[in-house]
Length: 298
Image (tube, rainbow, N blue to C red; front, side):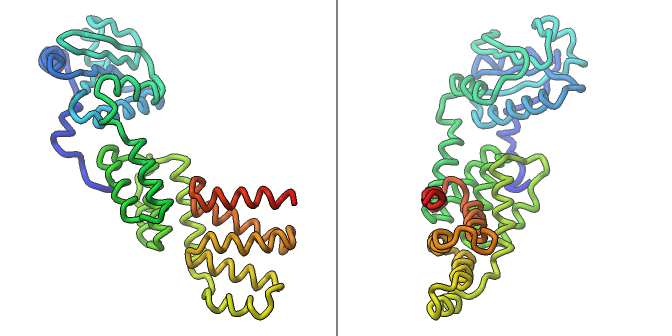
């Protein structure tokens, strides 16, 4: 795992409990902070395992305002009976010296986030805002600031797939292809998201095109014969390889408007590759897609 292990303070937010430690871990602790008591099973299904991991993630984000004590039903049946636990998983919430709330089964992440925000406040659960800030920096070409912001996300949630996706796109955009590949290749198998899949695809495309022809030479060839669509395509490809994606899209749009079917739709296919590399929220992608949509019906 990148970015190191959890520090000791963060690790103390989550512990395994027994009936013998319940008094201290829960009843005493909940007089000062909210305590989540989580009952699971050694034979828990994937959905339960995923929910448990998600619960741990949000407890860590609360930075001590909430702690989690985990119990396995097999070794804590007496305690489970005393607390009225009848289903796995069950989550009980203790506060001010007593049990305040709870729920059986799994809930969706947005529901859990609302619960945690109510208990710990919104400031400690600002990952969405940090991710948006990082994306804005990336779109504006502030790659170093974007990387630092994505790193801040990972300090709070070390398995955040969207933060890793953003970092890969930062490395692609700044032509740090080796760094992008090292990051993508060394992620743990369980770190997944659609955004990360898209970033990895973008990296593959960027690596395939990093040895594009020289821009100046391609421009000279095009200037000799501006009506030569292959020369214009070569120039667009060179611009793409040089990171001049918006200008490359303009050249490809010229080809597409001139001949929509040229070279088996090569111009549009390269446009789609550029969109993938830039990402769906990049202003150049949004502008390019609008132009392409308009051109299709011309």
